[in-house]
Length: 175
Image (cartoon, rainbow, N blue to C red; front, side, top):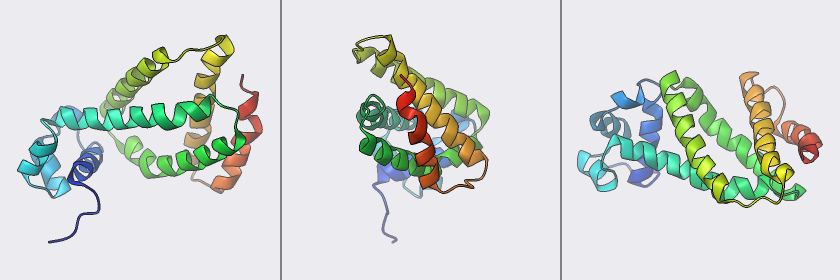
């Protein structure tokens, strides 16, 4: 038997994400997921109660990453933290953007809507000093996403270092 690269729960989540390219989220079945992940049905049910549970797990992981790793950097002016974050974000997007882009439009809309709601909940728990602090986080994140997505859509012609330098040239001016 082949050794697993990731825990079963992660294998199931990855298989579910891959299935999003071919099926609308509501059409993905437990059978589809276990076949794609190469796990037993019992393994699925030891980790999740339904395919909706898998989707929620994926969304919660993204939200936790946003809360724990993205928000603290986006709200800071620490150049070193920013550079490290930007490289991590570029490599994260490199691993995930194509899957999101290939997803059925319905899936992408549903997933982004739910993640936006989760992120909105996180933002409501934050205490901002003034209007600049409140909206600069959104503006910075929007600018980063726009540049990186455009770069991916354009075929990654420039090296990641050049994109990070470009973003760093303006990011602290967004107040």
